[in-house]
Amino acid sequence: MKAKVHVMFKEGVLDPQGKAVSHALAALGFKGVNEVRQGKYIELDLDEKNPDKARQSAEAMCKQLLANTVIETYAIEITE
Amino acid sequence: MKAKVHVMFKEGVLDPQGKAVSHALAALGFKGVNEVRQGKYIELDLDEKNPDKARQSAEAMCKQLLANTVIETYAIEITE
Image (cartoon, rainbow over all chains, first blue to last red; front, side):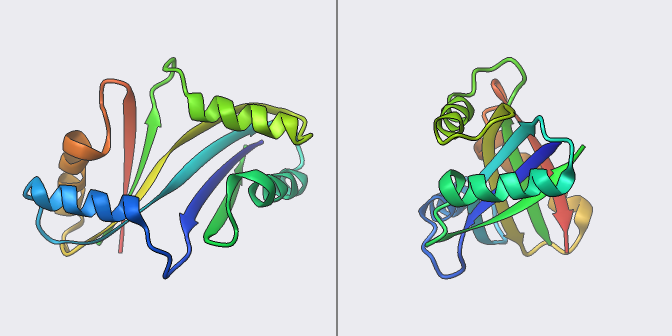
């Protein structure tokens, strides 16, 4: 199975990368950009064939390594 | 509209972040992880109400700023 993981800053946590992108887009002349948020996207190719177990495994990986759950949230999508 | 942009290294381009995550997961005792690829995920909140124009605008942003098209690919999803 594949696990697709998005890690984003929680609402209210300052997102300096997003702010930098927002300012850079404005400097390049792009108008009408209200907000930019930047996060991480991680694709994991897992041996596990059971979707539930793959999700459990990906959850554990997020909690232990991929996300800092104090300031970040994660979303996991399991696909073939 | 919102534009959700994924930026990943092209196939064949060395992905040092993915490799580092892969090694760290192995060191933490996670087994059965074949491959890890890490990329950027950017959410843009745009004033534009027309989905086609929003996509055009996001495409231009990717080419000019968000992705280095020599070594990276991007995918754009437009939502409400």
